[in-house]
Image (spheres, rainbow, N blue to C red):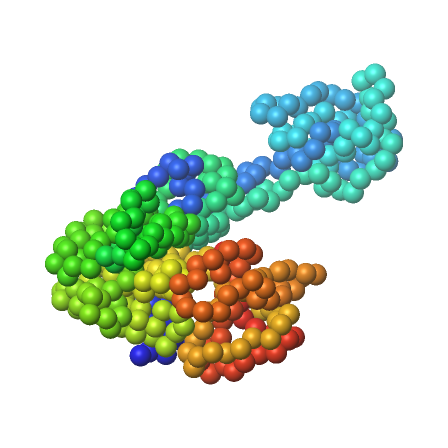
Length: 399
């Protein structure tokens, strides 16, 4: 079995030959990853502009104390009048500064007396004047390729008159849960050995949360021929096929055999990680198959560790998962000489993260309820030992 770090390096070093891209209307591109650089094709503003409502003046004229108001300059108007000595022009937020003026004195700083203003409070030269290129300069890289598009990016692109933008297509992820004991939602239980499937639903939620497009294939019985057919169909339809169950060493664990039989490259099978040591990842061209364990907690954790990075890899995105430093509020017993990912309660107090294990059960990798609450995953390497209260640890947050 691979060292956990080695398995992650394999994923990081994958090179994708052909990324799928498409053009989208900018608002529809929310949540997608940008597939092109956004570069300013003009200065913003292109000319000196007023940042407030007030009066455009020549700064040295403030010593006069009173100035005649020559005209008015609404935003969007093409004013021809210039400011000359002893005069001013009433100017509004967003208006171009009149020629001759170098300062804007706010309305609040003056008193109007017929056709003149009386200066009550002076301002420095250049006050409230937006210089050319204050927002951005022509030729400036504003949004880099690989950026996930959010509302600020949409606003900036609109200001550049960009209506449609090139993005990476979100990967399609086919989800299959194997196991003759599994029941779909609403399906009637006919014997005590049957259990309700949760893996395919939590995987669908994970795919949606981390910017993939889920294709739900539901539950499949432990039949090698059926599994082979379903995986082949899923691989045709999707960029990633993710399965749960059937990758261990049992008599009915057929998924690993089916993956080996496909014309694909097995990147790794088996990692020294808890939970999920039987994880399997294979590649066929620019498509991937991930075989996750069947226990619910185990499949959830390994989906976060291996499926989410592949979803991001296929759209050149940045990881939503991140590791923070935290302090233990109670001791932690290291139970295996493997990389371990242990559900823990995470709290933030005075800018520091803290971890405890209240109500977290110790047992098999099936305890999905351990993921409820304000939860993260305490990360320990196979070289780590048990920890005591107050120790600093690494915690994986879910973004």
